[in-house]
Length: 200
Length: 114
Image (cartoon, rainbow over all chains, first blue to last red; front, side, top):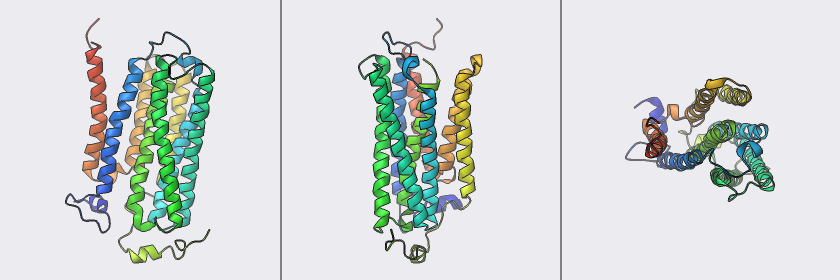
């Protein structure tokens, strides 16, 4: 067993497989979520270019605006990994600071998504307007829901850290949270390229 | 806001001597470099979407997307240094998603000559 595998064994938890149950659970969930988002992306692709009514993607999609939201989410991935390293070093002040930054960036992303959805609505793109509207809003809507759940989860952990419920002894628990957040980010990496940058 | 949790932060390390960084080789600088690389690649992607590069447009975009994807998974999610079973879990989920798409394309005779 390599050094890194030995370190995968969390403190005080005995498992028959030698790996963390929490980590195994989260990776299994992420594998299933890959298939979930994969199916939504494939449906979007199946109907791409078959929109017979406007508005069409080129009429509504704003690449500069979405580039900023992509950068915001990437930055939040960086800030949450910095929060993790701070927690590992028992630097609670640094942990809370970086975690708060992640929460704010996630909230900023959600605000951007909300503004984008409202703008599209006013331009005539709704869930039932055409196939593009349906596939687009289902895909990005589910992603936004994932981000919202992540922001709430992080906010709860940030608050718990003030009451001594989340300490450096709980690094494994927070690491599992970071896995979820990074997954949300990599799904947006896929959506940004496949939906926004590649024209229909 | 000062709380009991702020007092003597090293107290946690003392009570739990096994608490340590799992990835001591990953410094702030390492993560910062990864983040910068991701930002540069994102900029390149946006640039490519505005520049006409003919038939290379899709392959370049997809390659840049894949690089960002793998970088976040291996570095930020620490999959590179983690147990192999997590590799098998994650990549198998991704592979299954791709296979489903291939099956869909085959259903609609995408691979047959026109």
